[in-house]
Structures are given as C-alpha cells and as structure tokens.
Length: 193
Image (cartoon, rainbow, N blue to C red):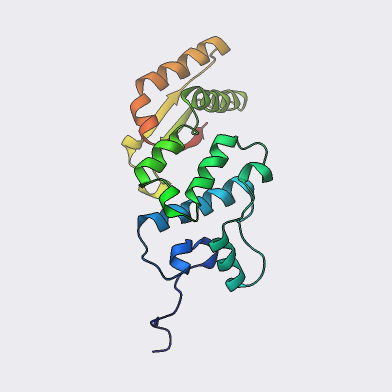
C-alpha cells in the first residue's frame, strides 16, 4: 500500500518538529516539549517561529534555532514567559525542561490568578444583571458534551448592589476554590433568564 510509511521517511508536521526528530535522532518526551514550545510561540506571537520556504527550509530553520523571541513579536508577552518559550524550543534538548511536570510548574507562574478569575466572574455577573438574567451557570474545566450536573456551579443573583455582588462572587470562589483552580481556570458561562 503506497499510503503506508516507509523507512527513511520523515513523519510529522515540519512546522512543529523537534530538531532531533528532523535529524533522525532518538525522539522522547523532549521532542513533545519542543513541539509544545512551538505551539505556545504561535499562540503568544500570532505566527509560527519558522515559515520561510518549503518544508525542507522550515525543518532546516528548526535545526538552526534562530527564531525571534515571542517578546520581540508581541511586547505584551512578559519577558519571563518569552524566555520560557525559548527554553521549550531550545535546539539543545538538555536545555529544555526535563518533564511536562516541570513545564506545567513553570507555566503556572504565568496563569491567571484568583483575582483575575474573580474579575472575570464579576464582570460576567454584572453583564447578566444588566440584561435581566436571574442566574448564571458556571461550568469549570469540563467540555460541554461531557458535563454532568455536578460540573456546574449555579450562581443565583437578583437585585444585588455592586458591594453585595462582589461579596457574593468572593463567597462562591471561596466555597468552590478547589474545583475552580484544579480546572486551571477553564471557565464557561451561560446566562439563565
């Protein structure tokens, strides 16, 4: 079958391939960490790190490792986060984080804090009040098709002052803090009229 892979052929998308994979060396978790770095680079800068030319040119650029920093392309990205993405995409795999756990720990420093989460929920509640809604269903970290009733936090509100609303949101966050932050701030809101 001509659709099957053959020995000596490169497998993968050149846009996300680790240099060691391109060079035919042993591939392990470090290659995944590199690819994650490329994805993070693209998410934060809006462009992939290497795009000039055909597939072979892109692979050569990955092996050379001379991408601009994320911060150079998007000054809103903190330099520390830009440096982390640079480490993830290091051509020398010994300079990359040793495991995905280490990556997760390093990324956690750049994720929204409880106060950011509080601000998001508060803004959403104010918008709901302005539109005459009676409550909000707040789903935490679970894709819509996989949600069970227990995955929803129902926030009821009516005619609350700003101070009462802030206190209510703080109370909800405190009560459900473990569930909210275990999910990594992946929130989905739905108004109920």
